[in-house]
Length: 93
Image 1: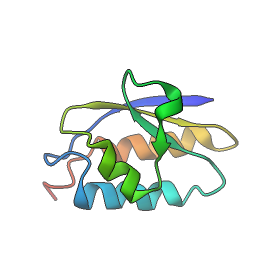
Image 2: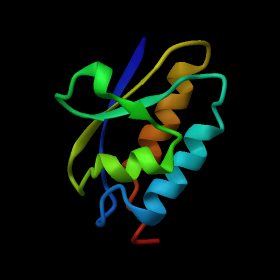
Image 3: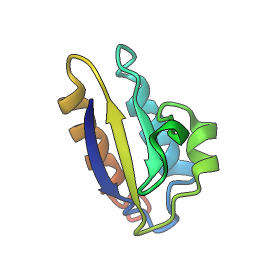
Image 4: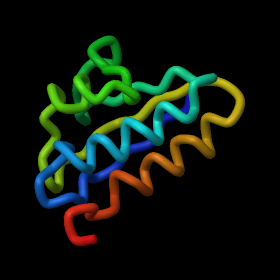
């Protein structure tokens, strides 16, 4: 299993626009099961990274660290791309 940590860069956290951008990108990797959780939470409590509802309920705030996990061919590249999205302040654009 591939794992990456990312720090939420958007000033409003992982809500509204940043969550929509992230969920759409995660959904493009439909051949992978990608999960997201707050750092320190048990792996079995991780949520579907492509679900906007899961992302909103995660409630990750600006500066908070989350863990992304995926398994399968292309997992490294997928997680690298998703980390880049989370570590971009989409509210500043």
